[in-house]
Amino acid sequence: MSRAVLLNPGPVTLSERVRAALGRGDWCHREPEFAELTRAINQGLADVYPALSGRFEAVTLSGSGTAAVEGMLLGFAPRSGGTLVVSNGVYGERLTAMLEAQGKPCWSTEGSWLDPIDLGRVIALLDAHPEVSHVAAVHHETTTGRLNALDGLGRLCRERGLELLLDAVSSFGAEALDPDALGLAALASTANKCLHAAPGLSFVLARRELWREAPRSPGFYLDLHRYHAQQHTSGYSPFTLAVQTAFALREALVEHAEQGGASARRLRYLARAKRIAATLEAAGVTPLLAEPERSAVLWSWVLPARTSYAELHAALKARGIVIYAGQGSLSERIFRIAHMGELDAELDRVCGALAASLAAT
Ligand SMILES: *Cc1c(COP(=O)(O)O)cnc(C)c1O
Image 1 (cartoon, rainbow, N blue to C red):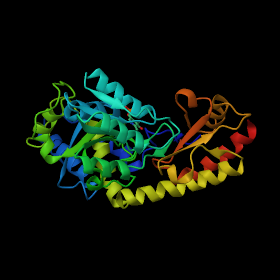
Image 2: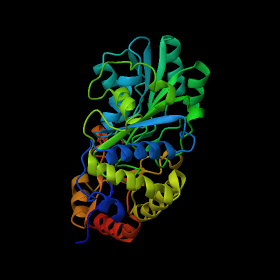
Image 3: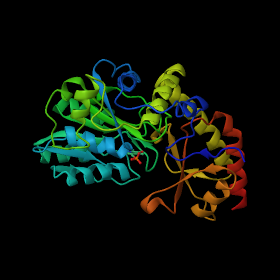
Image 4: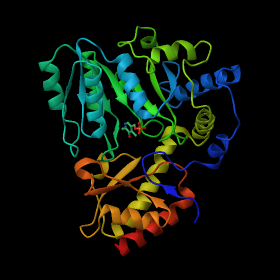
């Protein structure tokens, strides 16, 4: 069997050049060449979106995307006043859980997983809680594959002078992002989703001046202001970074730029999505969300009545393809297919395996 093709929402199938970078050698993280690599990665992360470059500064840490989100909330969500969480999926609910764990005042829209952001509900909560100074939201809600429409929310943040903290873990590097339209203060993301690097490193980008203010909570490992103070001077980090993943992330950032950046990556994902959709729809499978609501990164599909997720997963796994289950109440209802990673050469095989597996269940 050729290598497994990963259609789960990260970690992704790596390109040969990124996989090769993992084997670049054994480096000490306290030597100047690694400090230089860290600075290049942080610069490369800000350069992924021209509108962030020069105005937002990145810190990179060892840990999965959740570590970056938690660090972002520790550093930037207020301890008094409050944060409004806009939630319509697992990851929005996690924002609330993290703020509660940090003992920070927060209110959530508690939206249904199947519905778009309810701006009326956001406005009602903001009116009821004038002490709120920050909004936390998820850009691409991976639970369903919904690209949350942030334009209305962003306008509201700007009108009311609210700072937006964004979980962009499964959108950064592919979906469009306009920090000025959003009133963006900071975002969190990870190496191993749309950037196509290996798991192990994640990062937060925040407006330059926010790093110069005191952190909002006294974290220790996740005190990202401390990372910023070191990574943006000496280039060293307070704790050991995942060295080999850093090689891969640097290579993946170069590859991302060479391939045309975020807008090109989004179009590539969409082309893959459409080919996979043609196969699934021919087999009678229907999408969970209407097309304008979907991200380019991942689409959710309703399981045919006759087919269990376990059966479909096993039939595909036997053909070298890994798909992803739904979460919570969607676990028996949908399956998810992500379009990230090095997939183009495998798409025929993917579509063939999907058709054969669905016919066999
Ligand atoms: C993947 C993901 C995360 C973080 O997941 P990790 O397993 O910690 O990398 C957070 N938010 C969203 C929207 C995600 O898709």
